[in-house]
Length: 335
Image 1 (cartoon, helix red, strand yellow):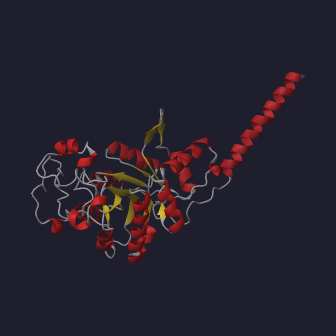
Image 2 (cartoon, helix red, strand yellow):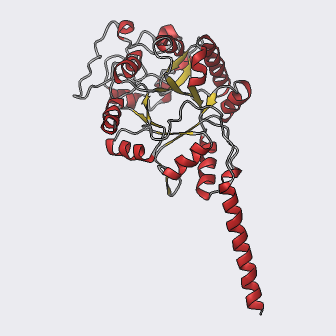
């Protein structure tokens, strides 16, 4: 009798757990955002995001790269990182220093530059330079084409070729009339007061190009910048910072969707993440659960055709790539 009673209690507990989990997964989750231009419709192919403007096809983060990506390749999204200059301009660059993408150190090899920059004192930081100083340099200097040739090494007409460092306002101005549907993924890389100022400048620039306000998603790795964006610029769409993204992924994998209270618009993730064990993130279930909250799922940085195909089959919203030419070819196969 006691054994039967114990089994009955265990059965009730297990049934209760099953019922709770079922309810948690049946209740429609609240939408993180009402309108999200970064989500593709059911059955549509993912968007092409040119990572750094497409750094394998053209010199990364230059107007040349951005123009080619939009006008020639036909990408949907420009992705890049933002830094603030000494005199208050927002410029596109992957690193906080410029040594590895331009000729500021003269005629030395990229390998020599990287060795030089191992000592942080040798680096030329964007925050310490004015825009005029930055615009002196050739940001296509180390770029190599598919044959391994440095085709812009000796370029002189930097502005005409679009090989100077690019600014936010010039990029918006370039495409505002001709490509009103263009989308942008940006990450504010500065922290603290510089990051706060970067947020303000980005917001003020968007006031001059108001139709792009709803077509840009802003990310950051810094908690204080994330809070600044939420409090002072709540109308701007935000990408999920690392901790928020991790929380969302865990709650989705455990099936306790109702406990996630994120308010981000885009989940920007790799296909896997190593936390002592390897978490596989390229899953249709994760994408579907994100879509229920009106969250776009964007994978980075994908430069392999087979990996692109797998993500297309999963139904993701966007593939970020250094090689948008390749991704365009892969997508054409499906069309």
